[in-house]
Image (tube, rainbow, N blue to C red; front, side, top):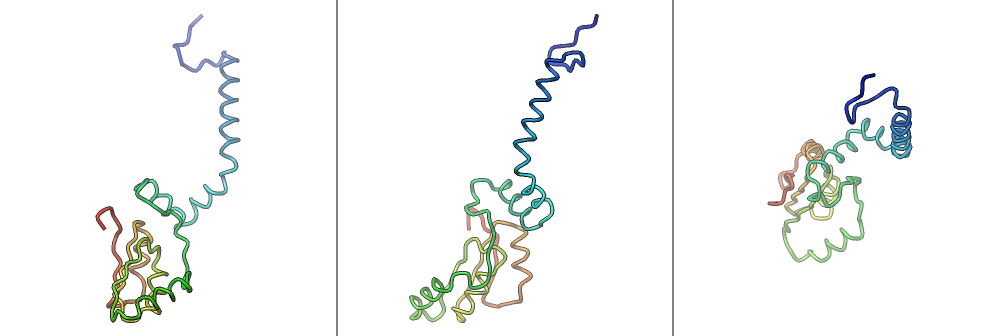
Length: 146
């Protein structure tokens, strides 16, 4: 009778086979609740880019959810406009600007400002560069040196 090498799969080892199947069932049960997230990740470009950014930059990503929309913080922006009213052409940095919605909104509150949007996610930065041109606005890649 041949003896299997240690750690090798032995089809006759019913106890080992049962343990492996139990492990697989347990692993699948733990993964099943997350299946919807994985499907969304695989099918949605923005979600996929967020995940890839988190993998690439790890702890350097301070906020990995890029949900944003125009005029997201109207009271905050209005207060900032009022505080900076005596400055003729302020320079404003939007750090983590996502796809540029906040920067575009800031233009309506600060028509004479120089606006800089910094974003670590390359896919979102590409979306920023597709926005209509504005001579007093720029988008740059965010990094530890930015």
